[in-house]
Image 1 (cartoon, rainbow, N blue to C red):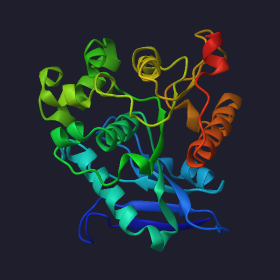
Image 2: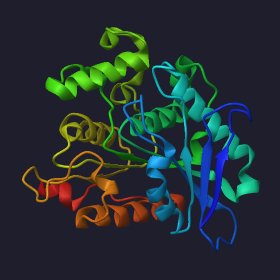
Image 3: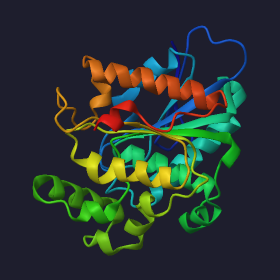
Length: 290
């Protein structure tokens, strides 16, 4: 494994930074690139948290990037997603240096990082949405081959209805991220709700959530349904509610679990398919059984 760590995509004196992981014996031309956005409810986490998983993906023949971004409350919406657009611009500008194919990009993320990755994909595929965000996209639609979305948040109206400790946690995080205590009524909340903005030009998407993850029924499945309604190619990886072992939030990274290893294999097949310019299957047997 070869790694370039701490790349200062916002300038040498500024944080955050990027890490690029490359397979040891890369050859045969530039590699498709997976840009991964870490989770942490927009207020915590780091690219180092997901680095072991990114290295596994890289070992299968990809350039895989861990993208750092400013977290809240130090940074408010939409700073994180505009920084990630700058990260994408940096990668495209330095593509030759790192052996990256700038025309074969997959955006990926987990939890809040899935929301950010999906939002960046939407900016690339919808010029009006990008204009409303206040950015010029760093890539064009034809450069974006797919998205990988694990355990994400895509509908903030549904998040506002959460109760108990989970609801309190998300309300606190979104207060920090939007800068408003009454965040559910802000333009930011409307703009962040990917479910309400996706369009038929959204790229092929692999979307997954565990059967014991409170976000799966109200976030991941509705987004998968909406994308399918729009004619977007979707690979779904969900389980029946009574599936054992129960798969919780971020189950994909727990590779001691057989189901997680299976999803890793499915993820690699998806990457091979979309970066090779092929069509993806539209439904999972697991979902059909759920």
